[in-house]
Structure formats: structure tokens, C-alpha cells
Length: 517
Image (cartoon, rainbow, N blue to C red; front, side):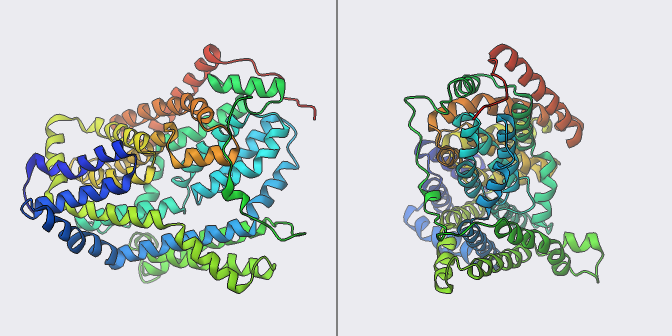
């Protein structure tokens, strides 16, 4: 490994700066890889370009473990495509809407639906917003409120659920760092153990429940809810709600009624297969239960589970005459293609991770941080930096790709919980994403909910900041106590106090919860 000192920071710093300037993580990551390869090869930019591909990008794409990650990302895309085509989510929403009688029930049902679809954020944002819109409109719930509930349950749940497209993505990042650091721990179990430390995601969902069930609206959202409840105008007169063409493309055959089982059965198959596959790939019963889980081949296990669930979803649609076998092949291709951006980000993320390892970036950061910063503050710093990167780039995926290769070596050397460091990056990425007007999930939440995008951003930011401040308190607390339970309790208490105060000082009396339609 070469010693570049402070210059070893150049590739990740350039990647971050370019991401902030261009608001696009792909050229930023590529530039970071190219700069690092140039530095390694005597500062020759032409040789650096050649080595960018020959030494970093191509080996990253061709590594067997990395290839497995790319394949199971594609299989998840296929599963989502079939779930979308068969309309199971729409059937669930219809069943829910038949029991909704009040604005609070409409909002609570939307929240519940958002929590159920934990396996893909885009699918969640478009589906929940689209199918619940008629229910909330009937109950005079503002489109801004619908978009907030959708946005604040979709991304957080993708990193709190046991399986999702986000999980397979971050497993790829975690696994690559474990390989670089020579650690043999299961990347999937690392993700699972990070969940209790993902304070912002947990607190954001708690806040949705508080806002919905205690009706503690404040700021621009209170004004929007007052308008909707008193006038029936679910969006302001001069607003410009975006269209959600992706959901309009879903056409059911004439006379066909979507069935709940079309979503429930494949997801049950997906989730149910993972524990036994983990035990099997981990060597059970020759090895003990805990040992087998710890040594399981998480990538292969999830690949097989996603493949099987996709086949089940495909066969269910064919059995119901929703499409032919030939058409199902087209759906498979489109589902695999839908994950193209994820493939590219992952390959570039692995590449820049390899570059920074050769440059000694992590070692330099660790040494500098040990001399200047208390370990107690490291989780807060990771959260804050992740939030800034996500806010300015509009992508959590890109934020994770940039920050995980820095956070994990830092945690390993400073004796900080690896799960805590990873979760701090997760939390910061989602917090910044929720505040960013250029965030993909924020835009899709506006589109699916039929809300003016800027109105959605303006009404959501006070709520996101409330959960964000509470999250910072939680990260400070866990740095002091080491207990995620104590930290979450303290954070939740701060969240409730802030929400109560803001409702009293910045709220508005929303009319009676009874609506006559």
C-alpha cells in the first residue's frame, strides 16, 4: 500500500465535491476512481485512465462475489416488475379503503400500507401514493400530507425491513469493505445488527404515527390540512401536481380484479426462504445455529430466495391470464434493466473503495481523527456529513457508496461499533434525502401522491428536521452510553417534546375528524 498522506483524501473529496456541484453521483464517483488511479500511476492521467478500467472497474465487476450482488439486484428488479404487473398492492389498498371512515383512519391506513411494502422504495412511493390517493381525497386529507406519509415510510422501511433492494445494495458495500479489511463477518448479519442504531429511520416513522394519530400538525402542513378539511381542496389552486406516468402504465385486463395474494404470496416466499437458506449455506446442522447464521453465504441465499419468489410471482400472473409466457420474458428483461443505475453505482463504489485502500485513505483519516476527535462524536459526524451529501446530491445510494468505505475502516480502528457507524451513514443519507428537493424518492412520492413537488418539500422539511434533531440526540446518547435502547428512548422523548411544542406554537386547529361525503 502506498503512502500519500493528506493527498490520499483527494479521490473521495473530489467525488463528494463533484457530486455536490453536478448533483449526479456517477461522474463524481468515476472522477474519484480516475484521480486515484492517476495518483497511483505516477500522476500520469492517460495511464490513470487505462488503469481505472484494467485495475479497478473491470476487476470490481468481474469479482465472483460482486457479480453475485449484481445478479440478486437484478432478480429483485424482476420480482418488483411482476408484483407491479399483477396488481396485488392495488388489491390491498382497495380492501383498506372499504374500511376507512375518517381522515385519521385514511392517514393511518396509508402509513400501514407504506410499512407493509418495505422491499422497494420506488415501488412503495408510486404504489402507496397512487392507490391511496382516492381514499385520502374522499376524507379531505391534503395531497401534501399524503406525500409526507408516503415519503417518510418508504425509504426508512427499506433499511428497517429484513429484505429489500436497499438491503442487497448496502450488503454489497459492506461486503466489499469486509474483504478489503480482511474481516470474515456476514454482511447480512451486519446489516441486521445495524437496524437498532438506525435512529433517524425509526424516529421518522414514529413521528409519522404521532402526526397522524395525535394530529399534531405544524408549520406549512397545518395550513395545508386546514385548507383541505375546510374547503375540500386537497391541493392549492395554483399548484402543479406532477403526473405519475409509471403507475398509469399498469393496465389490468378488462374485467380482472387484482388479488391480494398476488403480492402476499411472493413476499412470504421471499422472506420465509431466507432463514433456512442461511442455515443451509452456513453448514447447519453440522455447525450450531448461531455459527451457521454467522458463516452463511448471504448473497447466494438472498439470490435464491429472490429468484424463487420471482418465479412464483410470474407463474401466478400467467395462471390468472394476465400475460403470456412470451410477455413474461419481456417483463423479466424490463425488471433487470430497471436496476441499471444500481449496477453502475455499485461497480463505481467498489472501484473507489479499492482505490482508497491502495492510497491509504482510511488509515490517514483514522490517524487524523484519533488525534482530533472524540470517538463519542464520530457517529454524529458521519450522520451530519451523510446528510449534507444526500441533500445536495439527492441520492441515498450515492451517499452510502461514498461514505461506507470511509465509515467502516474508521469504526474498526477507533473501536467504535461497526453497526453504529454504518447506521449513522444510513440515517444521515435518508435524512438528507427527505429534505432534498432533487431526491429521487421525494420526487416519486410527489408524483405518486399527485402533490405539487415544492409544496411536498416545504411541508415535509419541518417534520424531517424534527426527526433529524432527535436523531442527533440519539447518536450523542449512544456514543456516551453505548446502548441503542437508551439512545432511542431519549431520542423518542426529544421527538415527542419537539412535536408537542411545535404543534402548540406553530400549529393550527384542524376541524373535526368526521367528514360527511
